Length: 219
Length: 49
Image (tube, rainbow over all chains, first blue to last red; front, top):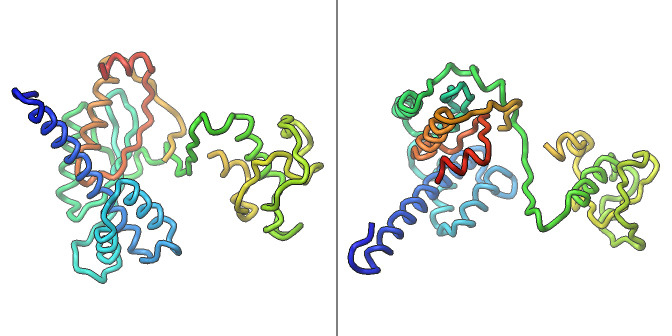
């Protein structure tokens, strides 16, 4: 890769990095455009908010973000982008779902089909593998930030307080605890008995009863 | 999207699956690729090396 100066090496590396960065830019811009179709205000549109945060994380200029939102809402002219899910099988029969945002569906179908067949897979019909997947949220936490015990406490606290707003004002969940108990595996205790959060790891926000069941928490 | 079950891949199939994954992710229009393959960590290391 390298020529006969150090700059030659750096140039190669930089070009590769720039290409990658540029690509993730277009990816994020498309996500913003799609998200903005259902409302151009990030405060009222969680998907847009996430997309904008992702854009900021790669330090995209806010002008670009604004333009992408306006193109999504239709305030600015721009190609219609649609979101499609392609399905297929990889080598060995593994199921593959490909989430695509494109302004020209036919071109993309051909490209994806080509990628599949060239790499020992084949593209399937709509619905052929999607049933093998579930749409779930995932929460990632750096493993040095909290131990598994602490996380389990958070999850089970969420279950114990099913209707925090009915028993007491939501705000009271936020007040500092007068007395903290040690982490003593509270999930072994009957869930209904203790109402007080046993750990300082109580949720900051309360969700409705359906959403706060552990299934949604740990999914 | 989270797969309900995983399919274990080894050797040639694992290598092919990784190549397919890469080819798909490299496409400009692709936002996300989900798959249910499962490759042993040791195998993955030897493949990416």
